[in-house]
Image (spheres, rainbow, N blue to C red):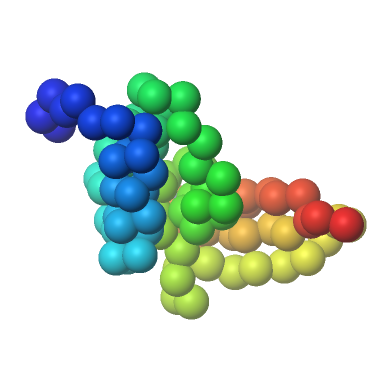
Length: 88
Ligand SMILES: [Zn+2]
């Protein structure tokens, strides 16, 4: 990735952009790195891809279950179960 000198606002715009365009794993890894470098939290966008292999979830590669207050999204690309606490 090229060296970039973006402001926080520009990065937040970029994050929004990337996630609205069905990003691939490489794009997700890049945007994660970029966000981390500026201490920007991905927030809800974190639930849109697999924590382990960075695949963007869609109807085919993921299975969602609700279990004991958690939403569990199983990634069919790598088999990892991503758990997210449900908000009360
Ligand atoms: Zn995965």
